[in-house]
Image (cartoon, rainbow, N blue to C red; front, side, top):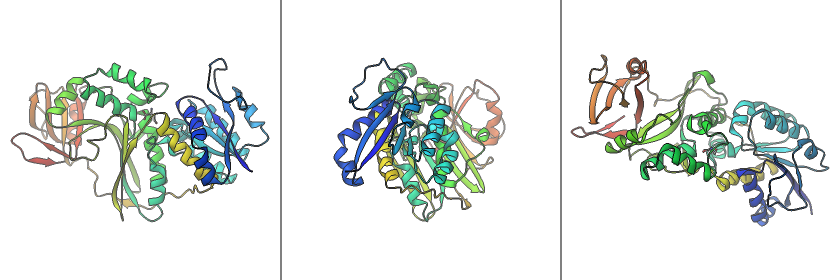
Length: 405
Ligand code: HSE
């Protein structure tokens, strides 16, 4: 019987998860692919570490050993870093292997080059696991893009940040305690700075841009902010207004321009992201025919991420991955301009605010709800002590009706 031979690069949370699923779901894989799937080699860093790996598998810390194997069909990459994994995957493609990656940072930087090289070598690239963990968002957008024109994407794309914000609110944990728990649960990156400073969500946002629109904004022009400025005090004050902090990514197409932001915002219970809690991620895709679709599911952790890799394994083996992207110009009518009035949750300003800014409410000492255009609010941001977070969707303020933002 013919066999699909696989190498797994890395045996951390994702690598081990993939290895375990290939064994636990061997029957399903064989049924759908008509062939047995066999792990032939695993690339590891530390030879001394004890691992539960079958004896007949090559375990090596030298990638070249893997390239010397007689037969190899698919290389699955789940290691940390940018340049070594890129080099390994380039070599794998040149050896005519399909490749699958879960590495967002590497793929945001080098994905385009890998895809072009794969096309030239007639192999496929799977990268579902790079965005939103177990949610099949890449495949959904690819499917939508066959005819629909996507004009906006919104997402909660970092499971660690959402988990920390939820734990801080629900269990009154400190930031440090919640981060430690996220690390213990296998949600956080090796360097959690990537999670809490918004880099991880930024890389995922850039990958989504390319899938949805066939291009990316200039990285330097994308506003990227993490969750480290959000204190327990701010979270408690937001709750009094029925608001929750969410780490939010948004991409809009405006004619030929792609505008993306990655930052914390506040939402109330009518927003689809209000109930997206813990390690859950969500992606809201708006396109012209179908309207808006929200996908929600586990955004990090061993099995959700490995699930995305395994589904990719089926797609690359069936050679179904195509490179369709939406490059048709489309103007979103849901984009705030610099002069449009918005509501903001602000800490660190006094009662006297500059012209053009209205104080709408103050329920908690030192924290205000302001109404202002983005360009007027910029005046406040010159003061480093001032923290401003936009409120998206709706907010209910005492003595005011519900305001749609
Ligand atoms: N550290 C990432 C997160 C893992 O928390 O979302 C999944 O990409």
